[in-house]
Every structure is written in C-alpha cells, then in structure tokens.
Image 1 (cartoon, rainbow, N blue to C red):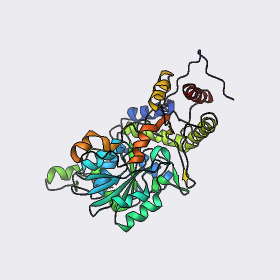
Image 2 (image 1 turned 30 degrees about the vertical axis):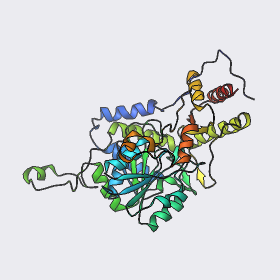
Image 3 (image 1 turned 135 degrees about the vertical axis):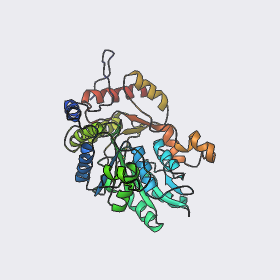
Image 4 (image 1 turned 120 degrees about the horizontal axis):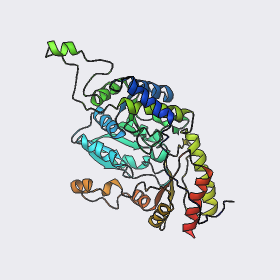
Length: 390
C-alpha cells in the first residue's frame, strides 16, 4: 500500500540525462588528445551501433531530423512525390518531406499502439506515392509485416523513424532493423541523450552510399579527399553530388558511445524502463481504473521511452497539477501535424479526417519514465495523480 502524500514531502521527478563522470571523461579525452575535429569517435560509434543491432551500415548525423532528410533524398523523393506518414508525431516528419519538395499524405493511427495503422495505409496510396514513413511511437514498434508487404506490392520505400524506440523488438528481432532505412535519435529526451547525434542505418549498400553523400557534403563513403589533387587539378572532384554538413561532432559522439554501453548493460537499459512501466501500470490500474495505461502487443518488446497514459477528462488540469507538484510531464502530442499552420496554409484544413489522432491529442499525458527513477519518486507521481482524481 502506498503511503498518502503529506505536505512536507519534497520530491522532484524529471528527466535524467545520465551525464556522469564517465561521459565527462570521454569528452575530456577527445579535447586533450586534440582530435575533436577528426572522425574517430564518429566512425567508432557507427561500428558499435552496427555491432549491437546487427545492421550492415550506419551513418551518424547531427540529428534524427537531418537523418530523415537524408533518408527521404536517398529514396529519390522530390517535387511531385508523396510520402505517407502519421499525423501524431514530431514536426520533423513533416519538415523532412517538405525539405525534399514532396507532399506529406497523412494516415491515421491505431488507438492502442498510437502507431500508423497498416489497414489504413492502402487507402492513401496513389500513383505519386514513393514511401511510407512509419514511426515507432514512445518505444512500441509499428506493425511492420503488413507495412512491408504493402510497400513491396506497390514498390515503395519504408523509412522507419525509430527516434523513440531504440532497442525495441518486433517479433523477437530488433525493430531498429525494420524498414529499408531506419533513423534513430540520441538527442534530448531519448534513450541515449548525448545531444546532436542521430543514426541512419540500412542493410542496402547503395542506399548507404547515397545517404553518406547527402550527410557529408557529397563525399563518397569510404573515400578520403585528396587535397593535393584538388589543388593541382581543378577538375579533380571527390564530391559526387551535392550534400549537407550533417555529420555530428566528435564530442557528442564520444558521449553517445559511453551512453550506448550503458544502454546495452547499465542504467539506460530498457529493462529498467520496463520495470518502471510495470510498476506504474499495476498501481494505476488498481487505484485509478478510469486512467488508461499503455499496452504492449504480444509481438512487441516495448522500451517505454515514454509512459503515456490516457485521461478522458481534465487532462490539461492534471498536467498543471503535476507541474505544481514539481513533476515533469509532457503532452505527446497536443497538436496533430495536420493542424499545423505550415500545412493548412498550403493544403487547407483536414480536421476531422483523422479521428484517432485527434482523440489522442485530447487525452495523452506522458509521465516520467526513466530507468533511474526511485520507488519514492514513482509513488509520489502515482499519489499526485490520485490526489487530483479525488
């Protein structure tokens, strides 16, 4: 039985970025070795990511947004093309498609998983469709078998936004390997929060080469520029196409490497978050059956980057109440992408077309869910929610 909250208790419950002495020492080694302008940490992070998750190729970039942009370009998507995507996610999904001059076509999501609904995708496919952008929301993988089957039937690329689902599993295998291209994030409020690092991964060598060129200012994968030839022979070019300065810094990659080890075995391991989620679910279901807790499909391994509850009434007031209690909460997402002004200005209003997404926007609330949270902190959160419900 959890003890009731008393007035003298003072608990702060927020996000832990796991910036400890090991991370600080890794950064200082890069600085003191005077190698912070090289690529050693970047390349090692790519190798370690592939070694852990089993992908053949990984390209580190400065953010998942940059990674999605490269993935869209590498899929040969441009003006006049369409990309199917869910509307209940971060605006990076919308922007990466618009950057390429293509058009986002939204598809509603499943009520339980909050991921794109495979049964609805086929209704949005047209002759202009070039790709499906599937997001694994909050740590629960999307249902990839029907998505991939549909994509192969219509000759579409599947780009997997795994920014929130590092280490999740789909039918026993890492969902990081699902899709033609996977993009994950090591930025703020992710499983690994090293700042300004994303990873693009694929098993397709041609895609990997193309992605690398877009990410590294047009340079070829595995080729180092020849500065002498560049000076004495103006026609000598090592850039095969235009590209962007999307590669991450050595400092951020050094941080990410340390945290990746903690993710594999340590305080950032998803099992820690799963234990937190199980505790939340058990006690919330027992005490507050009117609050809907997250589900985990039988084929999924949920990593619970976000523990998202559903509150049908007074969600906004509960959010304010928890904030007053010094509890960091989020609303993922309060505004569906199809309601953004940047979208409606160009294509008009689509309000009412995606009822599940719009219902989620009114109900979802993300509770603190880090694996380092103590039992005292979790009890404080649960009691604070119960206090409001009374």
